[in-house]
Image (cartoon, rainbow, N blue to C red; front, side):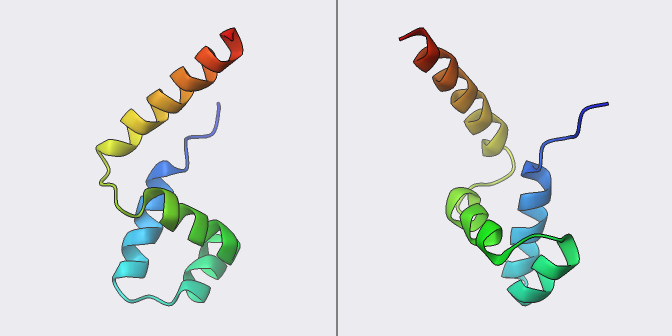
Length: 69
């Protein structure tokens, strides 16, 4: 069975960080680097959960169109 997307996990982690949990503790708990957290924050920080699937589909379509060119 394929792994699920990490978008839901990224949203959970970003919400916890907004709630006041230190970034170092979140990264250690979820087994990720600080750099990954800050990339997620810059990429998904202003989005709500409903916008992420739409962005993912647009990225896939863009990749498919790029391969055609």
